[in-house]
Length: 480
Image 1: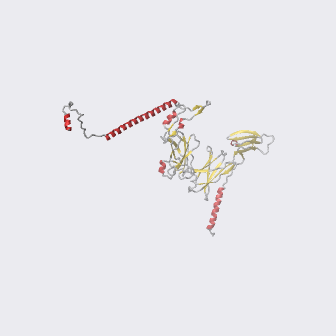
Image 2: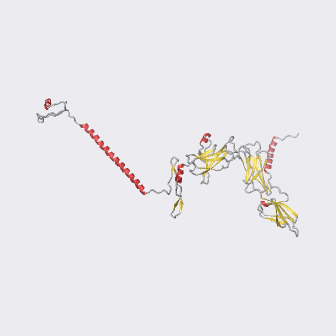
């Protein structure tokens, strides 16, 4: 009984077997398609000479005929037929005959060697198949065949073969890749391609992919741009998930770019990172500097630095929420204009001159008054420069205004001086009255009259009825 191979021998044979299988897969033949008998190959744009017989029969006339695209026609006479600047339409069955006797029949195939495929693969969502494609600079020759093989890397298994189709409108080959069962998103796959026809074959370079690295969503749909009332520099952009992506299982993050219609390039809006709470990001996804990572999880965004009164073009693209794969293509363009103050619209509707005469009697273009608008401190309003056709203020108006201003100043000064004088006089009188009251002397009693000054008899003065009457005598006696 033979002994089974030891563990060391198995370890040596396993890499050798794997290497042989990998080399066989990598060396998959990709040559020109086999041509049937009596088929002549002609290169596109070249010249070719068809020969009826090695030696032309004597005293005979050889006639050439061609049958292509279901129609027959007669060509030149002679043992040889020269065709110049071959085109695809020249392909067909050619025959030469003498009278009714057929001498030779052959098929001419006009083709050119296929282009080397530059394959790229993508996956529209986590639950979709992988699609691989490559573009074509020229239309492939009739009969061109494109094949694709896929296998797991470092696994000894046969590759899965897929036939690819050519789409003339898109000018590219497209293959639907069947992923081997049980393949994880992070496991590597090897994709091989081959394009061949009667003129030759060309194999593309093997491409190593993973299911997560080829993830590329479709562009967002239903992109709309709305103006916000009372905000002349803001636009609200809304969009929806692409139909091929189910947000119940995985989310997308988005990026928005926009431009005013006169501007040739777009400006990108990079919102704040996802480090902030998601609820806060949903409420106010304020734009952040360009160095920040895009992390918009909502389906709307507020542009806060739009140009006043200008129409804007907006596009949105999407990517997997975990950053796997690549960005989608940009969505279809959507347009919108920020809110405009009705007062500004009224001022813009006023007539203004768009041309002014120059020194050489020609006319030059002037700007609309709206272009001279300046924001106020709050950014909610502005002033508009009057148009060039408004009359210039007369010098007499300045004189009247200046005279009125000087008269008003003079009246004000006169009133101030008058009231100041009154206040000063009143103050002087008040101080004088207070000074006299403080120095007044009050006598204690009346001085006694002298005898020489007082008459002995005097006429009594009339007194009021009911009053007290005194006489000089009484007064003298009382004084004594």
